[in-house]
Amino acid sequence: GAVVSQHPSRVICKSGTSVKIECRSLDFQATTMFWYRQFPKQSLMLMATSNEGSKATYEQGVEKDKFLINHASLTLSTLTVTSAHPEDSSFYICSARMRDRGVSATNEKLFFGSGTQLSVL
Amino acid sequence: DQQVKQNSPSLSVQEGRISILNCDYTNSMFDYFLWYKKYPAEGPTFLISISSIKDKNEDGRFTVFLNKSAKHLSLHIVPSQPGDSAVYFCAASYTGFQKLVFGTGTRLLVSP
Image (cartoon, rainbow over all chains, first blue to last red; front, side, top):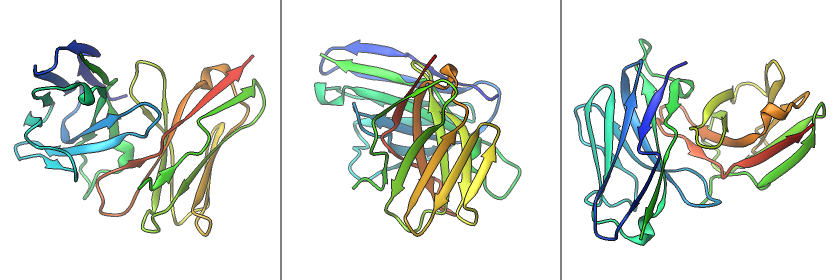
């Protein structure tokens, strides 16, 4: 099956520093990538949707300047948590939608990375 | 506002028995539902889906049932196997909506 590689899997950083998380589709082109955040015992919450070559669309309540998303190619999207604080500590996970010849790709063609556990001290 | 709810955080079942995982939703616009399975240190993987035009979809040991009037769906695994032990997420979407709305997950433990 399709593989999405997400790095790093775990990161610990000091408050005030920035952290970059990479999400790569290894064997397919991803027209759209999604970034989620999950707090303990809560559901995966969508943060933003990014389409290759265009600006990301952020969900309500998600700070654009804090969570910078770059989707420079059809196989790579990055999420940078700028000036991280302890409240940003969470599990971040990306997903990539496979390019589909059809009118719209179904959600079945959505593949997830393995996630990044961010701990901000 | 939790639009997709999985009220059971965990479920324990013996090998060979049936596992039933439940999911409720509140948004009547949802017309497409999916189940994902997640092992530790891995991302969720697609398991099975159902469209609102159906009330049942079956794939091997996995069957998803949809009750639109009750806004409820369930995933049945029979027979359950130890390798099924994982966290199961219910997710919902609707036509034209790119995004998935996830439940909180149910951790299934199948013991030998």
